[in-house]
Length: 220
Image (cartoon, rainbow, N blue to C red; front, side):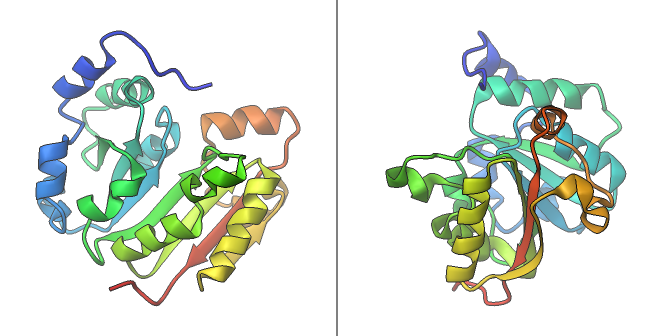
């Protein structure tokens, strides 16, 4: 269960140099190269949790820029704490925001790829539009991704994974790669970085599913 009420978390986030705040993030829409002060490709992790995945990814790829997005302050604080231990890491920043607002923060053709890791399954049918691999969110991603930009999705929830495959097909996205047992798929495991959830669930014997999709037709 995610911790949401660590006393002082909002204040700590507000004071962090590694968190871009709402007034700045909206002002920099379409100009995130100015924030990072370079023209490296930009990648997002939506719903990054405590930040292990995106922090390791940024360390391994200094020629790419990364933004970790998390809705809950108390969870984001864990990622910020990790980031503060790595002052030499210049290609990773964070946003505290709702993923529904992505097109208001990032411009057309501004994002090269998006990672979704162990997203909230929102199991009730009436909440399907809130699921991060839903058609509604795919439309939001398509507004900010470069043509052919990829969305990579990992989960141990088979029902959510089947939903993601169905939604991608209905929305006209191309399935680039798919596995129902990531840790037994040598090709898709190459370069894999485990999240905290992935490590825990795989240790419990749960199969990890992974989907990589792309879309060449961009929304206006």
